[in-house]
Amino acid sequence: MSESTSVRKMLVGLTFLSITCVAAVFGFIAAGWSVVDSIYMVVITIFGVGYGEVHPIDSTGLKVFTAFIIVAGCSSGIYVVGGFVQMVAEGEFYRALGARRMSQGIAQTSNHVIICGFGRVGRNLAEELKSLDQAFVCIDENPDRIAQAEELGYLVVTGNAGEEETLIKAGIHRAAYLATVLPEDAANVFITLTARELTQELQIIARGESESTQRKLVRSGANHVVMPEAIGAARIANMISCPTADALISDARQRTRLNSDLKALGLAIREVRVEGASAVAGGKISDLNLNDGGTLIVAILSTDGRIRRNPEASEAIHPGDILYVLSSQEQTLAVIRQVQAKRTELTYRGSRVRP
Image (cartoon, rainbow, N blue to C red; front, side, top):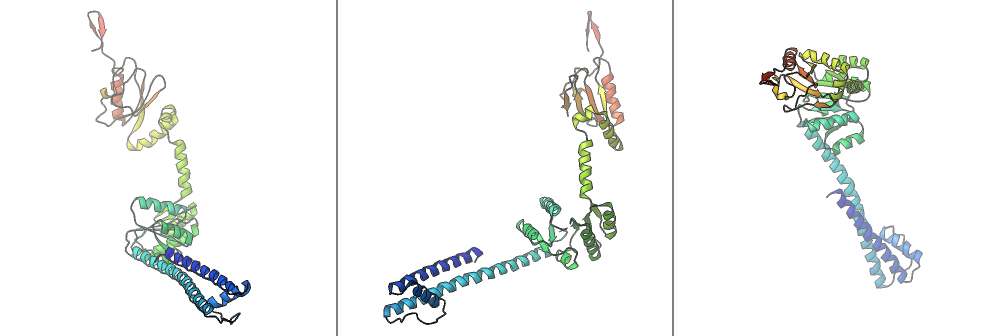
């Protein structure tokens, strides 16, 4: 039976017990007893105290009525108590059964990730691992956090991740990675030490808040140290310094900075202006020989200031346009030669025409 069935049983028993008590009181009042005497008689009769009858019960009908009250009251009371006991017992049973199933699930898991700490970072990490279909086990001392993890269907171990017994329960000898992401540096260092003592093959990724802690974590056995604040600052700086397409065109400093990064790959972004007499003016990008895709036109700046990003091969090239070419130096020079080539004009019966 479920817990809702036990509660329903208690409610049914309480309802029947209440009806029995009210009916008994009115029955004794009908026999000529006072209200107080009737209530007192019902209480000592149903709950089995048995101090003695308030008034002599001489008539057969009153005796039968009292016997019925005793049977009905005691039965409904036992029914209520039974439902309560069942509810408590079922709760303990299901908790024990859930713990057993959890242990079996962890025992059958291998090459998994152990997440030490189910706080903000731990929850986000668990969500990412779940989306990647990567098995993992969460460890935390906080019962509320463990309950949240269980509701999400995660494998969990309740306890201190710095204790060997807890890590063994999480299957550390079968795990591929351990990520200790607690907000306290000291706790992460201690967990790293404990985990490294248990196994040398495990890949340990630890969270750190300062450079000094980073060195301690590495000495303790961490393979990688992640510093969220430093990563966040770098990300913000990257958002500030990394150019958008518009900034890339309008800000020469950002273009220079990007070129310094591209230089390591043998690439660069260069401006190529299309003059009015250029052989490609009035044509299309497809007219250019871009070396089978080795060269990319990332944008075109028109004379009216309009920026055409990622232009298609059918995009027209107008006199005065500036092409932003991404390629190696040699390939870019080939594009420049095409753009700088002059139109060849022929005279036909006094008129100049393009070939």
